[in-house]
Each structure stands twice: as structure tokens, then as C-alpha cells.
Image 1 (tube, rainbow, N blue to C red):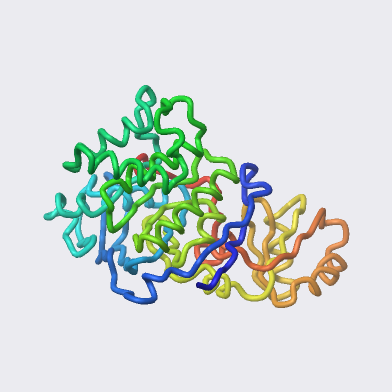
Image 2: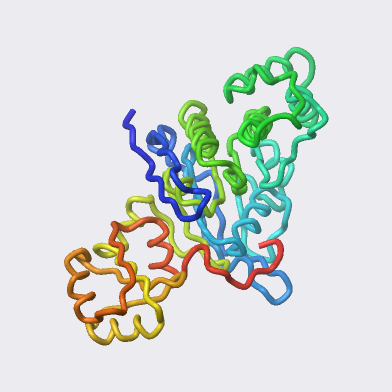
Length: 346
């Protein structure tokens, strides 16, 4: 099976020096390709704010699918609808062939859910948490004990089975969360911001586990994220912003949407500088996150010309190949981490 390295794209301080992930091509998605999640014109509003705006989404069986977007962009609302916790205002959604509104029980039997907030009982042991989960799905006796041991071994936490959850590190607790969600052998694993609160190494280990779930178990993994290293490991990535699904494609294909190289400039007056550069070079310069940003073919050759045209106005310049953060800016016109108007629950 072909191996591919997922890019690590530091965007915030807690992403610094994040290790690369090893990604394998999904066997299931190539062999079957049939959709396991389908939404049509899915819409949901909170008062006057549209959280999801006619979202049409298709997720292939056996794939690792990521929804990339800012906080408040609609990811959590879509997650809640996918996991049958929220009803859409209009549109339809099917998961594993069942309607997520009218056939909720059937959907819940076929999905595993990992919430952004911890759902484990810290005063119970790891094994006790999973045993209680198993009871909810009708598992008991030797079958349940065998299943608990199996998933704990798969996620490398079997040796912590008798430990209280409260003493586990964040990374270990997250593994237990995923093991718990996999206990009843779901077809679809849905995770809301699985890497939030984890250090880069723990996030890398988490993504490695999710890729093994996909490759070895044929499970469809669907996650929401605002972290570029997680997004880069997905087979397919959906860009979700202000409730709209902008596009879906592989991370590599999305990066090809950005032409040439990306030139980022720090300057005392970004807005005035961007206007002057746009006019002087007949090119589009935008201010994103306080930096002047230019997409330009052979951008490294453009830098000397830029500095010469505006002596004293350029504090620093960086040139790089497009990242997924650049893709997001290219498609939406703003940065992923810029402050945006948000409503609770979106």
C-alpha cells in the first residue's frame, strides 16, 4: 500500500515543531467508493444567523474525510446533525443508508461519536467507562469483556485498563475516547475537533490511530478541525465557512488552486501598502492577519523588485509554497484564525 507523508503546517504557537504524520491511501474508498454520508441542501439557523446554508456533502465509504473551518463556521452544527443530536431546519441527511432524522435509532447503532468535550467519567477506570458504554449497546458478559480488551489493545491503552481516567494524560484520555466510540464496531466514526487541547506529538499519535481505523477496519472517519496538520492527512477535505461548503477535494488538489508562490510582507501600514502594491504591479494584494499577502508565480523573483519599488516600507518578507491555510484565504478572502462574528453552537 502506498505511503504518503502528511504535511505539518504550523499556524499557531501550539503547532510549532509538530511532527509529520504517515498517511496510507484508503483501501476501502478505492474499492467501493459508494457514499456513506450524504446531505442535500442541509440548512440550520439559530435565530437570525444561518449556521448551515444548503450544504451538499458526500463522504465516500472507507475514507478519512475532514471538515476544515474556523470556530463559528458551522462545523459543530454539522457534527451535531450527523450524530443525530440536532435536527436540521430543511434538507436531508443520510448516514449509512438511513435518514438521520426519521431513523435516528438505526443511525446511532452505526456511528461512533467522539465529542470535543471529554465524555469519560474521571472517577471510573478506563475499563469501567467502556463497560458502561457497552451496556448502552446491549453488550454484556464475556462478549463485552472481550470487546473492551480488543479496542483497548488496538489503541495501545490496554495496560491502563485499571487506571482511573482522572490520572491519564490528555493524549491517553483521547485514545480511550476513540476506543469507547469504536466499542460497538460502528461503520462511521465522527469526531469533533479531536486534536483540540493535545500537544503536537499527541495529535500525531491520534491521527495515526484514526488512519489505522480506516485502513485496517474499513471504517469511514469523519472529523471536524481547524488544525492544518490534521487537515493535511485527510483523503478528502471540505472547506466550510460561514455555513457554506465552499469546495471539497484532496489536500494536494486544493493547494493547486493557489497560483505560484505566496509572498507575505510585514509593513507599518498594511492597508496602504497593499493598495499601493496592487496599483504599482497590477496584482492583487490583500491584508490577512496583519500581513500583506500576494499570490504570484515565481514569487521569489518578485521580492527584489517589490523591495526596490517601496524602499523603507518593507520590514520583512517570506516566500513559500501554498499551504492549506493559503487555500482557505484564497477561497474565502480571510484567514482561518481571524476573529469573526460567531453565535454559540455553530
